[in-house]
Length: 379
Image (tube, rainbow, N blue to C red):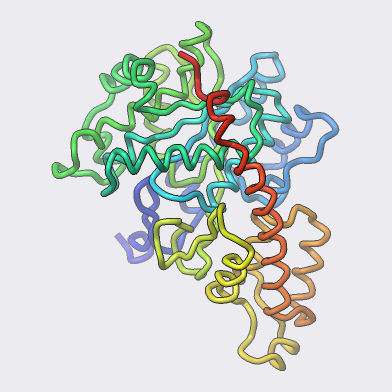
């Protein structure tokens, strides 16, 4: 194996090295989202604009999207399935996926099953069961603050819904071998048995609505690309149980503020993630102190040669999530590349946009606790 092939690891438990998305598309066997798929999505949602994350290729790949959209056209509505692992605070990389998922729910008028994998985090993290439960409730506040329709959104908490989940999970587990888990996640004999079983639990929401409603239903899973191995396994097994393979739509990672390799993380000090609960002052300090710049060493040099938007983290955050206006984004890109816009000015604009976004999110988050019972799946 060459050096280039060794320098990247991407799976649900480890993202290391410079992520080569083209290579992942080939290695994971994904389908890139092309113009035909975008046209089909546009047709399905009518006169509405495509989401800016689709227009810009942030959500760039998937599986069986053509099939899913054909089923939708025939009147066979899909449901959405996504989730989070509650082991710490929510960062803006999580929010990016969830706000896109809300757009899908609104435009296609579909139900969402949102899984809180408290069992997974207990098995993988050095945290007590009680700490995981605390983070589960905290994370719920952020999910509710996104604005999902409470009548069409169902929270599944793995340990709380174990009576519902476990009978389905063992059906998956019976078809799943240890060698498959080892090959997919790099596990060995020292992994605890719970972690080896866990993928069976993550597969359940992809067909649970079909069980509950007693009819085969298509499923669409929006997620970041590192979660793909779980769902490749799910896709292999579900037809053996008589259900559709889940379709997926996958995004690239919001980069760490430091511009380093890997992805943003709320648990890693080095990655300096922006959290959903950060104040304007905390956002300002993090961007000014840590956000990797694509600017030049001196103001004179910057004015003459311009900045590099490809590596500038403030610009990337605007592109990925915080600036919806394509025209404004192009103007910023042009001015930064020409040297007209300085790094300081770009950071200032990014700070304002991120702070404003979080201020609105936090207002909704503040009122979310009393709404939790409306969202929890009734069994």
